[in-house]
Length: 533
Image 1: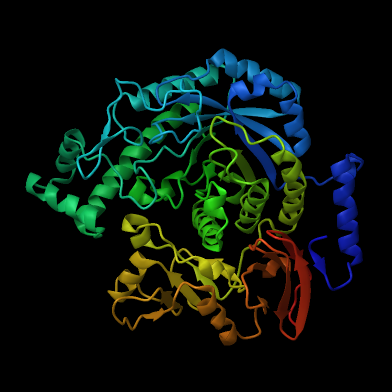
Image 2 (image 1 turned 120 degrees about the vertical axis):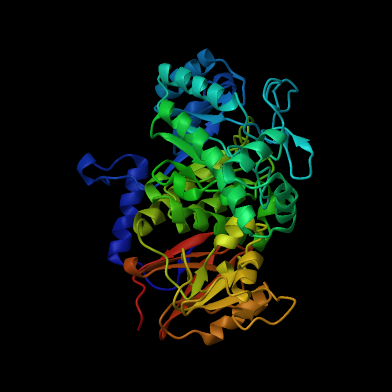
């Protein structure tokens, strides 16, 4: 048994548990059911996966899935014809599921789709141009030339005529091949357009290439990033004119301006927050979990929770365990991401995964009903600044999220607490380009002393030492072991997550009172009526 607190269950908690159980069994009268569903669950599938197994749609619905996103137009191809999408939609709708479409507009670099039959097209057609990196090497995917936008517009027109009303552009809709890269196509055409637009002389081009190579946030690099963002935003808006406001963007892990994604341009549209740890090797380490949570929290700065979707991905489909997939659901609860999107390329998860996932999905939905709309608060500050967004290497200082100390997300330097900076932002603070408004900047150890920064190893041992410096105004986990504690004072509640692969017993102190709770591996629990005494 997991999530056992040492205090008795209150009458209100008992009623809530009974109501949740009754609702899951479908026996609550309509007037007693919640007026609004806070958390829902979606999955992305190929039409083939739907049509090959007649029982699959019912199994998904019974597990808690409400919407299936079918694989649609892929970088110049229809891997499955529109008639197949329509047939799959009919079967899914008969099972009581909503159906929409995911397009892959530019092309994944390599086989990032998990296609194993040897016939799935992995690169755009030959009449689409290759991209050119700053190193003058050519690559397929994540570059934008004519006629990519025009062919995507035509595909969206076809989908709209077929009755599909919502479309997500998958995370190849970016202009950087991978996390941490400064993107854009450096071909002769883009070079000429950039120089013409900015008025720079051609002899400045080698300097730009060196700025990209060295990650120097110079005025020249700023102009390049703006140019790249304008190009991608222009393509999105051209497609949006066809699809309407229900066209969404899936953002790569820590995706931001350096990848051509000017995040402020996508406020008000469906937005999938970027993740990365797609297999057990990536997600099992504590740092893998905190990096992924860091990315989701960062992107939530730019999207309302009602429009926020997860990127709960396994790749290849069988390389992320069901337990780890379930643990990813906690990340969405902490970040108030209302829609979970399960994804695994063109190959579905192993069907046995749904047996494990179904109760975990219901459990997180129950937690989310309590926490939705309430803001995280805490002395540890999550901040991803301009330098990281424009030229950083996407290696966040994230382990503080598992120190058992509450945290909050800030879009500018805070006035109190400790703000953890990654290398690009730490260098900006050391150079006086990033200024504290009262918070203590903390960075990994630097090559030289910087008065604006407190230097701290990104290790659990070093971070746990901060507990000795806390007052009694926030709760914290007393244990000297990893725990994620999201505190929501306006809800008088906290969510505690055990990120370890073993059962742990945690002591949560707030003021003079301690609560003890036992959590199974990767499990989480809601602590309610959390007030200082």
